[in-house]
Each structure stands twice: as structure tokens, then as C-alpha cells.
Figure 1 (cartoon, rainbow, N blue to C red):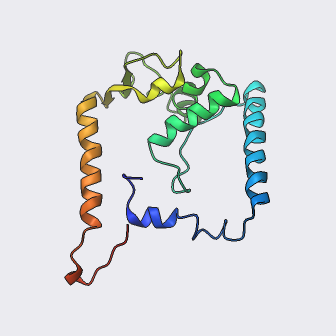
Figure 2: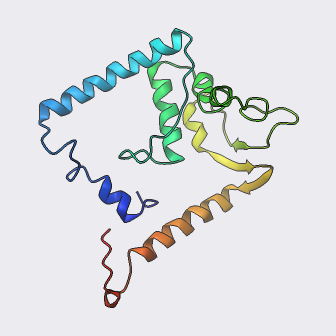
Length: 174
């Protein structure tokens, strides 16, 4: 949440969300059961040979751009996909779907140099996708330190937007 602006935090406040205002404990329990059913259905879809594409459903509540992709791959493994299959939902499968597999989606000569270098093998544990050592975007490298600095700059920028002096007449709540 530290990387989300106040407008997103406000939008994601379940106490204000029209979808949850009238929910009861029974509604929440039914949703938990639905979640378990969706895990089973996801595995059935995969086993039927239907390609699955990972993707963060931002701006839906608590679907975080970037971070959410790691969560989604973890959920796919929880549903019964192998770590390799979960990784494919975020790499080669979207490239095939969008008809750009000749340039993206896998690592080969003459393809775009978009790559994440990890410190541990995600095939052994999908959670290892979070252990990023370096990112290459169109061949340009970004170290883990540079990536962390970028995240810190976003936090600082958001802190400044919520700290507008009161004499401006602008009031922004966190």
C-alpha cells in the first residue's frame, strides 16, 4: 500500500466499497468457498490444455501492479500448476496470445532483451520470483539496488502528495 496514492487507497477501502456494504458473515464465507472452487477450476482449465495468462487486475482492490504478478503465480501453483507452468502464464503464453512470440516471451538470440535475473531458482519454489537480482528492459540493466531506489522514490513522491500544506486549500487524506 505504500506505493499506492491516496486516491487508490480510498477506492480500495472495503468500508466504502458498494460491493461489500451489505455483506454478512455468510457472504464472506461463500466467497472463501468460491475462491477454493476457482482454484480447482483453474487446474481443470490447465489440465484441459487451455492456455492461461497471468495478469494483474488493477485497479481492482489489492491487485498491485508488479507485486500482484508474483502473488498470481503463487496462486497458480497453489491451484496445482507446476512452477514452470506458472512462469509460462507470465512469459511465453501472453507472447503467443498477442502474437509477439517471435520477439518476446522467451530468451533466445534476436529477441527483445527483457529479462529478470533471480538469485534463486523459481522452478524449485515459485516464491523465488520475488528474489530479483537484476532486471533488463530492452537490454538496459537495472540492479536490485537501482530497483529499490526507484521504489523508494515512489514512496517519497507519494508522501509529498499527501503532505500538501493546509494553506493551499487542498486537502488530501491518506
